[in-house]
Length: 257
Ligand SMILES: Cc1cc2nc3c(=O)[nH]c(=O)nc-3n(C[C@H](O)[C@H](O)[C@H](O)COP(=O)(O)OP(=O)(O)OC[C@H]3O[C@@H](n4cnc5c(N)ncnc54)[C@H](O)[C@@H]3O)c2cc1C
Image (cartoon, rainbow, N blue to C red):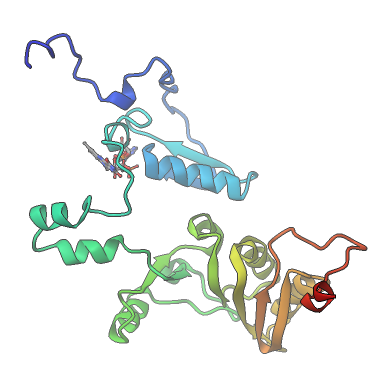
């Protein structure tokens, strides 16, 4: 066995490729950007890629201290499994005390709460959230295992929000430009049959009313169920799937004839 391996080079399989790109030049000057990502492994590279896909005009800079993919991402075994422990038997054998926690953390969190909390500059229209108060409220009320509080601005967080949201509640910055931006970023993320709830659609928040009215006038993708202080809208059609003009929609009654 040892003899047969004598000529082998101890190099991670994924990194030992003639197609491996040459290292990029080191960053030596100050740069500015909309989003800075630190680390060029799977996490950082996907974050940067998705951020550009969501908004191609966004300036994204990814900085890597070594070489792209050289660390864990370039040396893994290639197993694809939705488990933090590579299966129950392996998890219980190696992490008997932590197994239950690891399983819980590995599950998809159904509720994502996005708010910049203490980083937000409060104003007359917008209060500031308090991260620790919010978190203890969530935990005290028994939602700690299903709700993740993400401290981020909504326009940054859009990148990591799935495109199949069942329920989206919008109650963020009440200025016109922010509401419009939130709506344009997050409406496409609601699955068909899913619901959007918007708070503060009322006289005290004319910017909210204006942005919401603009988006939903002539919008055949959503059915509005309520529009009085609280807007309830249901997605009835996929994004960008407007019915072709002149095309008739048949009901099952028509088909039976
Ligand atoms: C031996 C091994 C086998 C594995 N097998 C599997 C498997 O079969 N299946 C599986 O799903 N997972 C596996 N994993 C786990 C998986 O590879 C990692 O979870 C994943 O690659 C982590 O990606 P990452 O981007 O978070 O981290 P990394 O790939 O470690 O990337 C982090 C990057 O950040 C850079 N960095 C850190 N700090 C700074 C800084 N301050 N400034 C600039 N850059 C910085 C580092 O240089 C590094 O390039 C394995 C891991 C190892 C080590």
